[in-house]
Image (cartoon, rainbow, N blue to C red; front, side, top):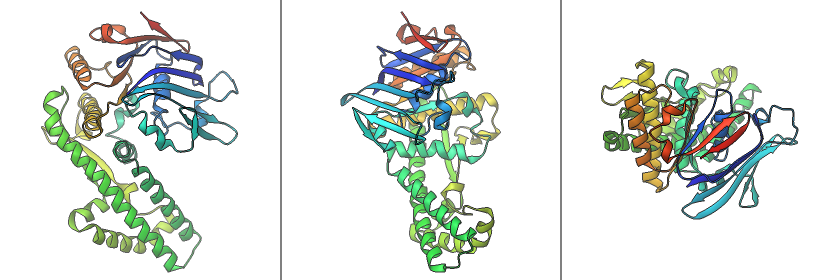
Length: 373
């Protein structure tokens, strides 16, 4: 699958722009800082489920020129099942996102997954290994969702149950049977979410061992850390659920004050190691961490191709800027071998000299994308 045409309107710094006649393989966006290159990648990322590569609120995406026409993004997707037209936009009156697939409206973001799978790497993710666990969980959950669309339903249900329990605790409710029923359902959901995450991590680790020899970036070992993970490592799933129910019951007083829940998949963390040196990513140098981020992105794309038999659309923002010449060249060779469509941004065209002849090239400036012959 790949994006063959992209229409962007009233979005960020774009009033109206169209990128047409886009081929698979490399798509290069070059131009000065602030021209809107990353905004194009963000627009594409919103054609897959979720909040896009910046995680922005819908109203934040509205064009900056004061235009009140709601933003919209649409694309023609060429895939193994033919061509489809998908689009998304902002319903400002209800502060909701609209989605349309082949002329039909749908309220389910999950429906986009069948038409476009996106993976991305941006400079903002350079702190992935140093900041809190939330971003690492989200990255893992996006991958799990790509392989198992029901994963998002499990996550949303757990959040609803936790919110209901928190509301009852803060209100001082003493109905133990009600709270116990919620905690049982939370425990069941927590174990199912954790098991799904662990299964994908096992497949990633296995893929890294076989795939690592062909990539110029370090092979990785990934590990999921948390209380639920510890229980599942020691006990069968049913017993792990029972332990969590007991722990939630004992934590009610604390949770009533702090909100949320002391235990659950919302507190898990994904730790990443350089497999050759068994060194945690957060102790590596900045350059080593960047290489590990690239390796993790390539690993995800490779797993999706192996598991689903489909190529991903990779959105790689300024990925080559801080790589030396040899590693850049090796990266381009690997990306070409990986297949799919790869969107790359940069200010310096020379950085992409090795792939320029094979790329669909657009120059981006002042909210316009001009195809470069």
